[in-house]
Image (tube, rainbow, N blue to C red; front, side):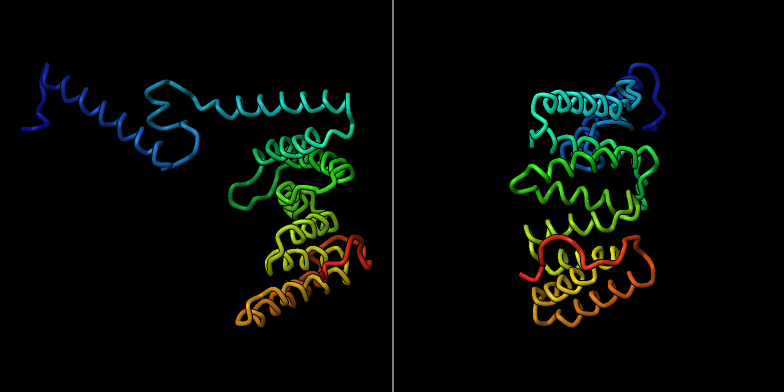
Length: 234
């Protein structure tokens, strides 16, 4: 029988299957199947690796943070260093986030607080703050993170200004309403509807109404105000 293997023939077939396993594993990596880093499973079984890549990545991130802090000692307004601090602390925070809910743990929130400090310094000195960094901070300020709807609204306004779309202004509507910034929420809602395709305006209006109603139920934590920041009507 085929699998009744003895002696040299058995060793030959074992070697053949090992080569096939390596080739299949390599093919999965090359074609992007599974995770982006080559760790775990077949690769670790062959090499004896115990998946310590996360520690190496965190070590590299911490080294970047130290480098950025040294750069800021020389120039406190170094935009590149401040921007990199935001990314670095957010990256460390993401390691302590629930993969199902996106909620950050206590250690993650400590890193988000550091990202928050670097972000606010960065915004104060940047001529044109990065909307990609604002997208990270929008997640940082969300309910699963620092839960700061007013700061989330500012980040959402920056994103909407850089990349205007119905969804961007709907997001701004949501966080501004949660922060009690009723004027900004109203203007952002009008802009969301205005940017929507004709056949979707009714749906977007319903989403705007739902976002504002949900905020009034008590999802946010801001103090009611007319809101700060530039008008989002343009």
